[in-house]
Length: 196
Image (tube, rainbow, N blue to C red; front, top):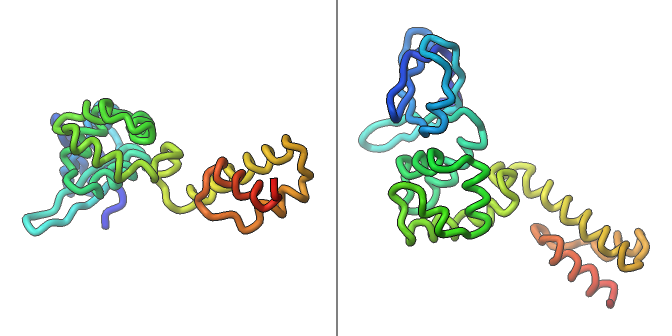
């Protein structure tokens, strides 16, 4: 797979950038937001890429940030959402703005993406909500859940201390807590174990 392109910007259109890498020109589909941030033609450029291989050909899509690329990959994983809609989403929203709208289950906001109706907006939210509850941190599967879990454990531990339990009691109560539980769930688990 082509992970990124590093070369010279040879030109751009309303939907794509042309990157010259050692004399080979790559057409890279990009969101309008990313295209507007590209430097002048002839300048050095580095673009993260996603290569889509289909029966009828190959398409290369480009992103200026890893967050944007990861969100694009999540979006095209939703049934009924293709690269065109995913790029439209990244043109209409910043990655953090779209992640926040999905986490908040804001169907009306997601519907502002060109080409997305209520049904598709609901499907995007339904399929991506869990992975974007922590915002952009949820985009990166490796490490993100562990970091979120550590944050939830810390919050539950502090809540137990504020209730008058000792640090040792809180540690014992939270031991073996279910993975992926949020702070509230961890607190309930701990209080049951403490008999409170």
